[in-house]
Image (tube, rainbow, N blue to C red; front, side, top):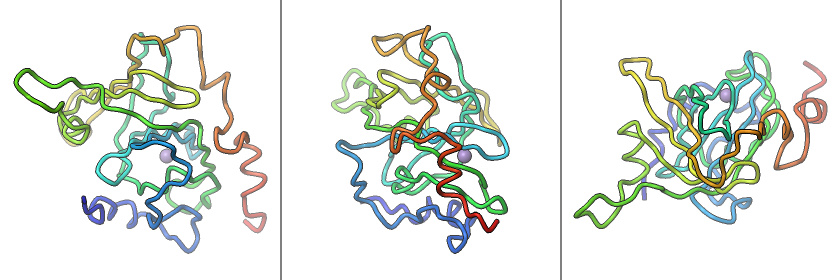
Length: 208
Ligand code: MN
């Protein structure tokens, strides 16, 4: 078992759970998930609208913020900025973070499901490189099985130093479709069917 306490210190230090409805990592069962490991893409209408791309790795959600969101066109390279690890139960979070809190704004479960490691074992090796090691190496290839997105995606680190940038790229397979544009044609939640406005209206605190 991996100890995810240390990985989640940054997540916890940035948040006040008395005023934010965000989950703090107590539920590791993920009742919504039929298969593991999971991925989730949360549409987050904060100071800038972006999509948080998260994958379950060693007991936490490794996370990247993707300003334009994922594409189904293999020609697109979408900038993905690494953010702090999130607890597994964050994959079920949809709601409104108060404006004066870190990440203040509305969060929607835009897509989610399970994924598998697409890396093949190197010659002479029995096991392919783990996804955890791929994250370390800056080159992750996984197969998504979501409700909107499916097939291979690569996350590739470019440049280095203190401000690494990653790119999220659709791999050219049967899940690829240059004519689809799911961020605009399928804008609503896969958890509740709601739009951002509906989540805001139903979950927002009228006293604020
Ligand atoms: Mn975010």
